[in-house]
Length: 95
Image (tube, rainbow, N blue to C red):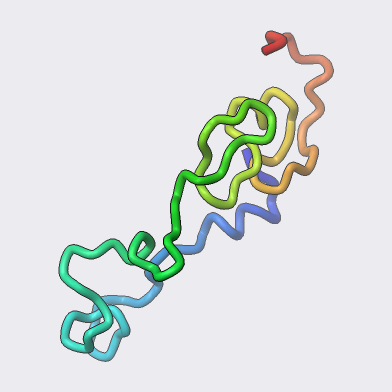
């Protein structure tokens, strides 16, 4: 669960250019190789599951702070950690 501010970040796509003449990601312009993943081929070595949950240390996608289970249990936004839900009256396990 994410807050309304972080929902805007989820709408972004990895490759916003449309496949058409003059786009940066066409094969003819030299901007893209065939069968190449653009997110994994960046020079800085982007790793999609390098982040860890701050509570349980599980692997996360890039941009997240808490895993889905920890975020729901504590009522936090999974991306920024803001408290968005009061879970004091919920019957949950103490994991």
